[in-house]
Length: 386
Image (cartoon, rainbow, N blue to C red; front, top):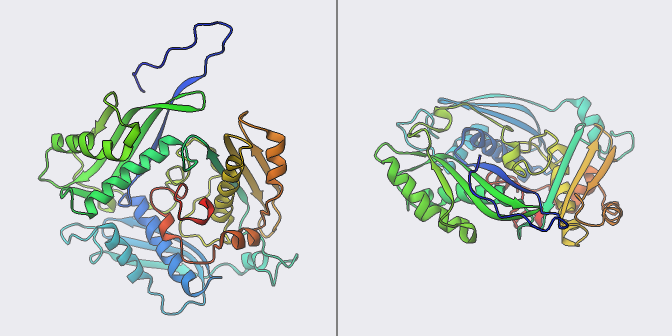
């Protein structure tokens, strides 16, 4: 909990002071065990969808020690897809290449437990067999999208800054600027708010895997004097409290130290806890799975609500029944920051049926590896951010 002083509240009793609070979000690097699994899964998805845009992919990955387990369901017309080779290349791209480590691209054993998608699911999803003759939702569930005017990317500031820090660590490692950095890392950023407005960063936590030949003081110095000032930019200031490798040592990391599984970083992937989450993970799923595509579309619609100045904050919820195209419900929340009735009417103009979402966002193409790390939202190159 932050111990920093907060700005003074209004002294005039007739003026209501804004609510003051501190909010914290975390990010993890591409070398985090769970993110290694997500990246392998999305790499396999992209390989299939590049050849067969209508491939049905639900790929789950487990990494531990020198083992990689691929499991799930894939129905695809793609030819010559070598899942093991894709997994090894993904691990190599992340940076796990040292032969002396248990988990490395050339030394892992890849186990495969992949079958085809259930024909019963296909009956409701495929246009040719759906009773309404249109693409149905790939599963039941609820999805949320969120946008806020507090940053240029319309993302909450805490998660945006946390991602900048972990991405900055990876950039410095891959560029060879900091030779002792290793792939596994986590960040955490606490931001002080007055009402809906962020006013200061109070606390920064960095835990980064490192080589054995580095002192902890050197790591802390790098974070405080190089990494944080560069990536926090205008939000950097002398009053930030830093926690760098609080346990004192982080030599053993990645899947060699901890098990990784796809879909365990859903809050890191979205809004850092600032908005609600329906519970569905993204990576390894083709866009027929509304867990992924509808969550992306809800973000797109929430952005449009904020961009058209109908609200400063917007959250969209959509719910589906498996095999049914039209949503069970669509809900709009503006948190008292705009015109809720106008926002609802505006959102009604968007088509939330799965096929319409896929067409509008052009989702039947291999774009998913670029979503895996440092958040699925807030990246201008992604179609739901445009």
